[in-house]
Image 1 (tube, rainbow, N blue to C red):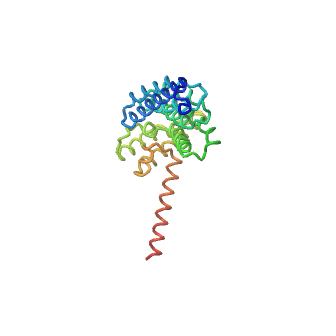
Image 2 (cartoon, rainbow, N blue to C red):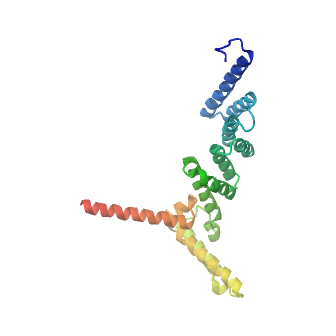
Image 3 (cartoon, helix red, strand yellow):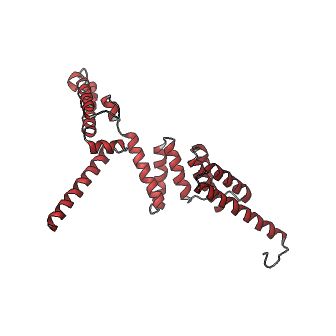
Length: 245
């Protein structure tokens, strides 16, 4: 418009607004790159004020999603969730906002909520690497939250030695043995379940590889899967070595 009519006042004002917006966005990205997230959040806020875009505009979704990611780095999770909500309202396929929202929910301990949200997103955006990675993390966090605390079961600290773990198991097994808790069928069933968990705790925590995986957050099923996969890989490696020999 300015090329056709350099004196077009409206076009001139729009161009100034666009350039001002670009300066704020560039400054925000540079601040985020320099890990100065407070300045980044401030610049994104000024960009939003400058843009004054309609709530359903893609530009609004992009700017709110970018500022949400900045709030996340500042550990302001309430602000993160608010900006993600606005971004998703503006553009319901704004996957960046969904992924950022999931991260904020994890920080708040709301793992199941994150998983439920991402399950729906996976139906449409399952091929998106960021969405897929966020979904796997949510599954991991939910399983981690649901697994039993083996250290608490054995009444030992997380830094306990193998000897301390075995001693803790022996003490707790004596207390929880079904034969000592048989007053009622319910009491015996509860004792049997507890006794089984104690055995699982001993099995995992007395094995260095399994204990390391447990400390990393894996539950018993996932630990077994990884141990079996490692054993298969080692077996195949040995076979390949024999064949080459």
